[in-house]
Every structure is written in structure tokens, then in C-alpha cells.
Amino acid sequence: MRHPVDRRDFLRVSAFGGVVFASGLAGCESYGQAKVRDFHFVQLSDVHWGFNGPAVNPESATTLKRAVVAVNALPSPPDFIVFTGDLTHTTDDAQERRKRMREFKAIAADLSVREVHFMPGEHDASLDNGAAFQEFFGATHYSFDHGGVHFVAVDNVSDPAARIGAEQLDWLKADLGRLDVDAPIVVLTHRPLFDLVPKWDWATRDGDQAITILMPYRNVTVLYGHIHQEHHHMTGHIAHHAAKSLIFPLPSPGSQERRDPIRWDPAQPYRGLGFREVSEAGNAAPTLREQPLGAA
Image (cartoon, rainbow, N blue to C red):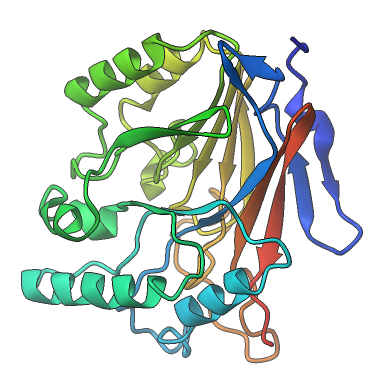
């Protein structure tokens, strides 16, 4: 077993201009009987299909399709893909909500990678406690294993009060309870589990309870969305990484009174939009590679 690394020491700019963050996801080569093998996956987030706001994104009907093309064109196809919430933009019309989900799912079906994991954001789930999402995409929280790494999808959006809830927290504790403390764990969620900017709804009301459950495990990485920008944070040894959006960027945390979307700049189309590759390389620390949504 290798000792966990200090993930903050590995944030750097790569030679090709993307940001690479070497996380402590694989603080050990193996856990239990499951050896960690090389693999990589892609995280996409905050698509907001159905959004209409020309001042913010006049190309809102094409950015998801552009992302699908970009992911399909990656030199090395990912093992799987995760969408960390806000697949669609909120609407009070239940029929329109399902129409947007149907359209989103049809576009996502063009991804060449067959294994795709979906999670809800509050735009998808908070108005009906995730009912429509479950019709199209299945459970709002679940876990799976890949390449010796345990993945846990936590739902902190179906409750409109931004809570995970006691029942799901009990499930999380039981799910992790079968793992060794050195097991590499990736938590997928939409809102941040820590209090980033509570007045902007950038927090989970009982997120501290989830972090308490995770804290005994030595190799935990949390990947989330919601804040529409790359952001890195540590709670003890647990690394939290926010992903960019595919629709519009938002201001830096707490930098202004309101979290109004950053307006579209015709001179820099797609600025602040992108997705993430996460690479697990066996003994080496895995890397997070930020890929911009280019104009090409």
C-alpha cells in the first residue's frame, strides 16, 4: 500500500493547455481482492437541455451535440461516461419536462461509449422528487464498481430542501461498510457536499453527514457539478472537484451578490464550457484533465 498523497501538490497546467489534477483516488494499488487497473472515464455536467437564453448562450440547441462529437473524437475512448446532473432545464410543465428528457436521451444515445451513467440535478428532479428522471434514467442513487474502484452516486437534489436524507445516508453507510478503509472511492453527486456558497444554493444541508461517513476511508474523490465551473476543494483528505457546464459558466464562488450566468462573448464562443477526462493509471495517481468545448 502507498501512503495517500496530498492532492493539492499535484495541481498543474499540462503541456497542451488543459488543467491536470492528480488526485489521490488510487492511494493504493489494490484493495481487498480487487486490483486497480488502468482505465479512464468522462464526466459531463449541467447540460440544461431546453434552456433558452440568447444573451447567455445563443447556441443552446447545439452545445450538447458538440460535446457528444468531442467525446466521440477523443483519441482514447473512455471506458464509460457519467453525467452529474441538470440534464435538462427546469420547467413547471410535467409534459414538457418529459419531452426534454426524451430529447436529451436521444442526443446522448449518439455517444459511441455504451456505458453511460446518469444522475439528476435539481432542474431534473426537485419539482417532482425525481419521478420523471426515474422514468427515463432509473435510480437517482446507486453504486457500481469499475477497474477496482468503487463509485457511489449520491442524490442531493430530489429533495427540494437540498438534503440527502436519513434513508439515503443509511444506504451510503451500508454500501461503503463492505469496503476496506484503503479502497479507492469516487463519489458522484450534483451539489457540493460542503458549504461552498450556501446563499447561492451551493451546498447540501446534510452534506456534512455524508462527509462524516466518508472520512474513515483514506482514498476518496468527489466529482460534482452544479456550479458551472472547475473548482477544487479539500475537506481533510477528501478532494472535491467541480466540473464545467455545457450551457453557460457562472461567477466565481461568492464573487458577487447574485450568481447570474456569465454572458455570451461572440469573440470567445464556448468560453468556460467543457467536460472532464478522469484517468486511473494503476500505481500512478489518477489525473483530471479539463477539456474545453472548442469552436471547431
